[in-house]
Length: 125
Image 1 (cartoon, rainbow, N blue to C red):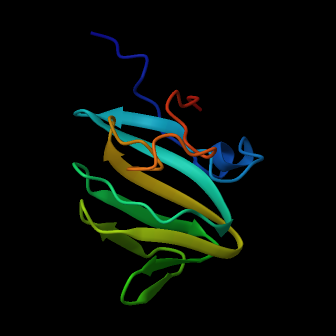
Image 2: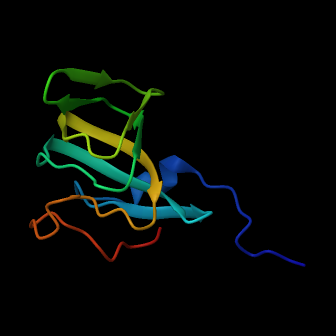
């Protein structure tokens, strides 16, 4: 059985297609999970996710994950898992390219479902 979807993904090529910030795109799917790519720049809103854990990995640049009690800086090749229910806010002082891995049901703004940055129908790269 031939599988047309079986292709390698070149992250640099996918990130080259993204020309905005805080607007995740779907780069792949597996087992009800999505691999999402986004460019971060500036601060995002404080939010949390009731039912989903989130995985953030820096591909290029760096960003800070602000938590209510500390700030964690992520550099290229580093990742952080934010457990469900934990309030957080990503902040990038310069543009960062970030890979996220999370359930397909995850809305980028979590409990702020009606924020101007909320993205529900994500573009596929």
